[in-house]
Image 1 (tube, rainbow, N blue to C red):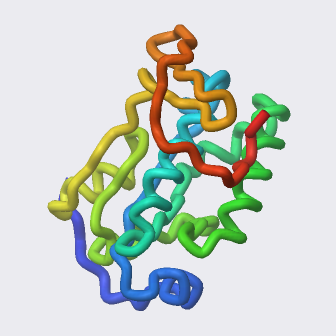
Image 2 (image 1 turned 135 degrees about the vertical axis):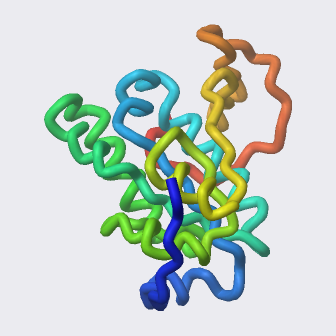
Length: 170
């Protein structure tokens, strides 16, 4: 895959939230939601917490794959929680929600990619951007202090917990 540089200005909302910070794309596809439905929101909360901890220098561009729209018909319960997540993201100064899937038009502005395999990840790689794939093998629940590791829950997690409640919290 060859990435083609485009000469497009960033959307105004992106610039307003960017505030001179690096933009890290965070992408997820429908398969991630459907396969890991028991832990998907805990994993997203964990990733957003890590990005928030670095928010002095990084803003998250949440750019879900177009396939995510199919969740509405495939699993209405997950879709409802996903809509709560989007509402949270829209009100968060450290997250840009890419509803129009415009990230691929602004690859040159991205510092890197985090998430699941996707066309956007491939485009970032082709443009020489760092690409990090999500590992759902370890997911920490901020409400209970439990960890989900390779299909098992444990209370052995010891890390900094956010007081902020995110969508999908129990």
